[in-house]
Length: 153
Image 1 (cartoon, rainbow, N blue to C red):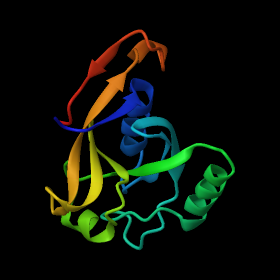
Image 2 (image 1 turned 60 degrees about the vertical axis):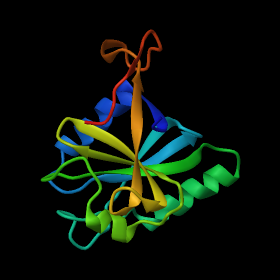
Image 3 (image 1 turned 90 degrees about the vertical axis):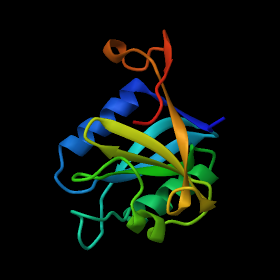
């Protein structure tokens, strides 16, 4: 059975909107606990060529870890977009990642997929797929009225 990560439909829709609004790769942090994403933190992409690569602003990353150490939400991973690609880790993603167990969400068009960065992963030797469990109602934000498991596209 595939591992799962939980996200609200409002957060999923926010990721799609953020990616659609920028022709370059967007990126940000995922805050939460365990397999539950509770907050998205958009960050500046400081990569040299933002059209094909992302690098989270180190200041934002340090600040988020500082907040977590003081009792705030934990950094459980990050997200980025593939503006001209598919929502699947690229060889560059694998080369730039650490096998630290963090969650990676990748957005391409309307697709959002979830991955875990691990040693000897099934994709490019670095990533294992996760099922993205999207909950809530599209018209009421984070409403927990319904729960629909939507596998990665």
